[in-house]
Length: 256
Image 1 (cartoon, rainbow, N blue to C red):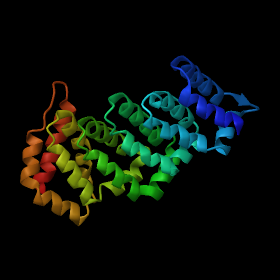
Image 2 (cartoon, one colour):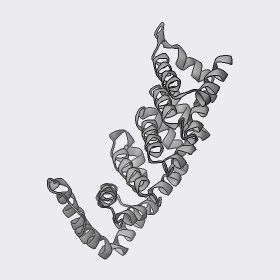
Image 3 (cartoon, rainbow, N blue to C red):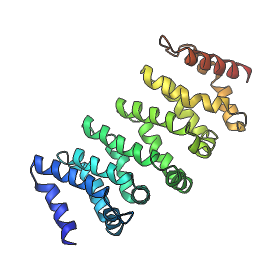
Image 4 (tube, rainbow, N blue to C red):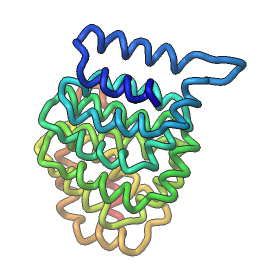
C-alpha cells in the first residue's frame, strides 16, 4: 500500500529527470522474472487501481507522455491489457485521441492501438462482447471535427479490420448500413489520405459476396455519387494496386 501511494504522489510532484528515471525503473521492473513469473505484473494485477491511475494521468499534460510509456509497458502483458480494455478507464482513450495537444493525442492513439493489436485473443474476446459500445464510440472519432483524429482513426480501422485475426469482427462490421454510410461520408472528405483509407474499408463492403439487402440498396441508391467519387479518387505514382482495386470496385457497383 505504501509503495503504491508513494509511486502515485511521486509521479505527480517530482522533477522532470526524476520522472524519467521512474519511468525507466517501471519498465525494468515489469520485465523482471522470478521463477518464470513476472512478479511486478502480479503485483499490478492485485492493485489494478495503479492502471486506472496511469490512464487518468493522460489528463495532466506534464505527465501524459511519461504515463503513456508506462501504460504501453503494462499492455505487453495480456492480463493487464485485458483489465484496461474491460475497465471504465478504456473509455477515456476516445476522449484523449481528440485532445488539442497533438503530442498527447498521438501518444494516446499509440496506446489505444497497442491495446487493440498486442494480444489477438484478448481483443477478440473483448470486441465480441463489447461490439456495440466499442463501434458506437469509434464512429464518433471517425466523424470527429479534428482532421488528425479522423485521418488516424480511419487509417487504423482500415488496417485493423483487414487483420486475419479480426475477420469475424470485419464480417459483422460490413453487414451494417450505418457503417457503410460513414465510409461514404469519408470518401467525400477534402483530405486525400482520408479518402484513400476510407476506400480500403469501403471496398470490403462492396467486395463482400454475401451483401445483405440493406447494403445492396444503399449502394444502389448512392450509385451515381459513388461512381463519381471513385473516379475522382486521388492516386499517386506507384499506386497501381490502388488503381486496380478502384477499377474493380467501380465495375462491381456498375453491375449492381
